[in-house]
Amino acid sequence: MFEFVTGYVMGSRQAGKVAGMAASANSFNQGPASKLHDVNDRLDRLVMVVEAMWSLLEESGYTKEQLDERIKAMDQVDGTEDGRALRQRLRCPSCDSVVVEGIGSCQICGTEVGEASPFAGI
Image (cartoon, rainbow, N blue to C red; front, top):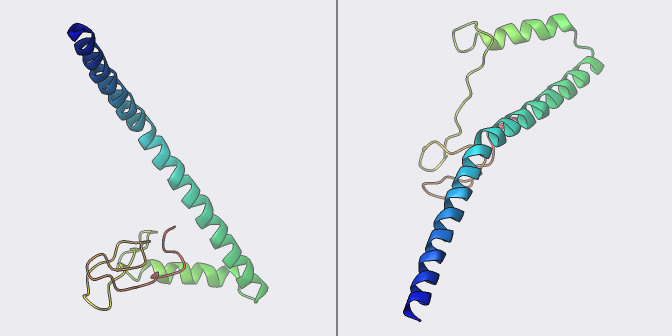
């Protein structure tokens, strides 16, 4: 009887280890692909937002030349004309710590901070 119990316990431990290893391997294999899908989803959303904004601006009479001028001016804000914009960090109004994007409140003091811009989380 003791051998049966010992064998059962050892078998359960091995099964638990195997299940843990399988879950770990599964999460490792899906991790990068899942992140890539998230980036693609965010990029698709960003493209849609930008196209919607441009259509509103065009309906209001703005031209492509004006858009090009604004893009160039915004590109130069950080001092380098490189086709990229530096993201501004959201800061807590109470304790001045940097707030993690998308959580809506300071992780240090708990103050509600809202979102920095309509593009937060994209």
